[in-house]
Length: 399
Ligand code: 0PR
Image 1: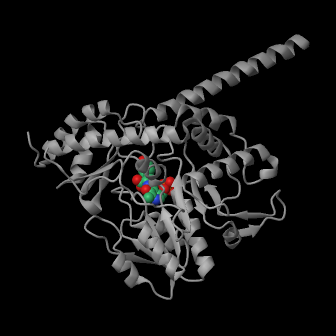
Image 2 (image 1 turned 120 degrees about the vertical axis):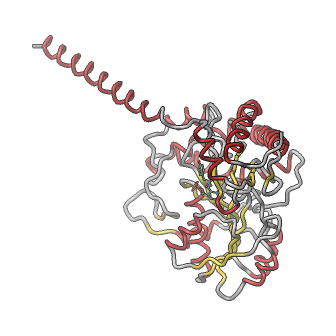
């Protein structure tokens, strides 16, 4: 009897192992259809390959739930520490706080939700370069976007901002690293306006948050954009973009912790009394990963990455301009927007050659983003394909 049970158990184990390896094999078939960061062929995305330490940390925390922090006090401690790191990075005052979520969209939603509840007003003044997450916010909430004109350099026009402020203004949004061009709005000027007029100023630094602090340190002339400016109320910053960590991880840093009451509900039957933000059950895995990356890299590590990305950006810019192509604007950060007559055809051709760049219809351009996984060697491989893609689209290029 004992032997029979042993045999059955052994057979079951073997069957399960076989099943598991078959499922994983099938998953690999799908995975192999994907483009990958590893070989550099994803050259237009704002995400990158997470650092190896992020992967290791992520797996360790798979079962954790920060929606019920008393069950996972250690993971909660990691989150507190990660928020402290972000507060330091963004020059946030002592009384500030943070909400960790899934990415830039969620943080922007929370920021506007907060501004609306703090002011009981409905209008959000916003640049035309703002990310489409704000369109989602209009659809989700009873608010109205008031678009502001751009200057020739694609920055928010401050005069137009002043003209658009009225009794219904709940918030002004400035972008620090716009999605299509990487431009930075004049945040110090916006901060002065918002301080004087007592208006909530949200800075969307989903992409730029992990770049701008280091651009300054390596000698680029960029203005202040963070909570050092007294008029800035909140900042979106994403670890799953230039933070080099795993998806999904975005954060919102808020100037006053007490404001969280405006976006909190009572949670009678879980370990915390109140919960702020949108999500309830949420994984601690991406938080552990982002914290691990921040500990691993430190400020010096991020600085080195930004330096490398900017070197690659300057290298790519020269090659592209030498080809006779023009950029929409001189890059502020590691984004190049190449003006073309038929950008969609060029994107189509590049996809056929195995390269993924982004098509930007609004600017008649394609976007390449020089993320950490893009090296000068990859640019050298890419340029002949870009030339070929442009030639066959009938773009005028020089030889
Ligand atoms: N704010 C800004 C300035 C952004 O650029 C983005 C995303 C968001 C908010 C929203 O962030 P989540 O996507 O994290 O919610 N910008 C990227 C873009 O549209 C998102 C992205 C990333 C798209 C990688 C494609 C991709 O492959 O380009």
